[in-house]
Image 1 (cartoon, rainbow, N blue to C red):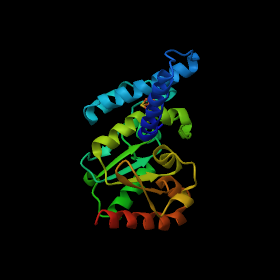
Image 2: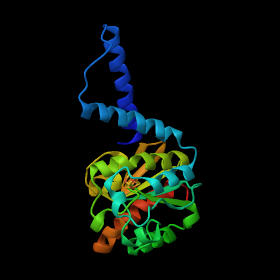
Image 3: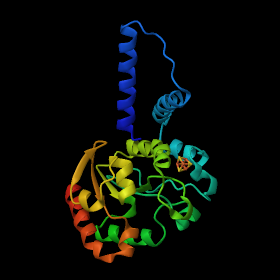
Image 4: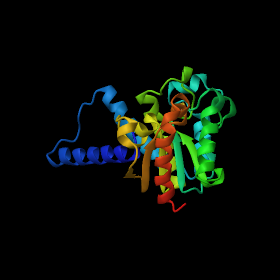
Length: 232
Ligand code: SF4
């Protein structure tokens, strides 16, 4: 669940509680599963608000066991690039090379992303790169909804400290985690969405370009929109 949805649900919860109190209801029986869900919601909000900087988030990620992905990871994969960047790239999750290096986008897809950055004349120090989940899903499978939800807590913290002007969602999982949509990339790309005080754009993941190089042209069109947006 992203920060906006979480805040909305907490607000609704407070309004419902107030309404019940106003008609004289001071207590309710809540089933355990539902109660745990409410407590998680409130605890997530509290702990998200309690991060003081990106280093605190990184340390929390290194110790994290919030979802089953922690079991098989060699390393957590937090970010690379600069936290002072206007441009943030968000991918899906670490692959084998990233899990070994503890850095995002260092494998073949990462090398292609480096070439895209070069073509955009954006040095690595001018961008911030991270993923939706910080631990490698087994056999590089897509992270589940619950895994994305558990890890969104850290991603929202990263966005709130980096404060990028433009967020580039690389692939459908990043789009789902950031925009909360399951629409296809071909229907999402080529335009900006407004969220998190940033312009969000969705494009194909570099791994998809390795499988189908004909999509490179579409990604380049999207990157030109980004370059125009940041005055590059
Ligand atoms: S993927 Fe995210 S939530 Fe899951 S264990 Fe790793 S850091 Fe924690």
